[in-house]
Length: 123
Image (cartoon, rainbow, N blue to C red; front, side, top):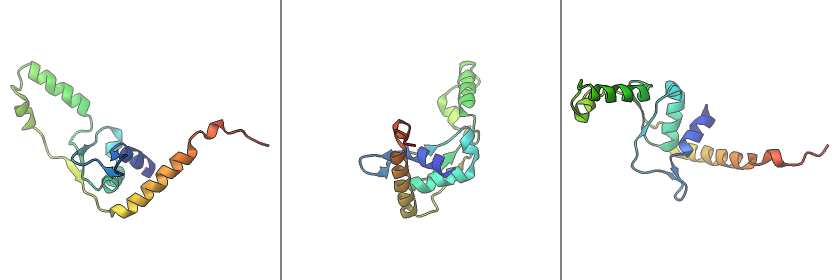
């Protein structure tokens, strides 16, 4: 689980500064969003809140919202925004120094594993 959290967090890090991207909210949905441990790891690694919406099927929900707009069930995007129920928010709990070290070690491990299949095997 931790490796998947690192991989997901890695996508949100600025490679130039070595810091998580500044002013973005991290929203999750889909199967991995069912795992509280994973989401807490991501929040800790990024040192930013991670938001899980009330439904993990946001693609279906969005399609239903758009169909409702087309059928005049709702009249505007603002009306849809008012329907937004509470979400679960995972706040960072572990210090960033722990995750910085773990993240650096993870990056080293990934780097070392590259091109392993091209190495010649000597018996």
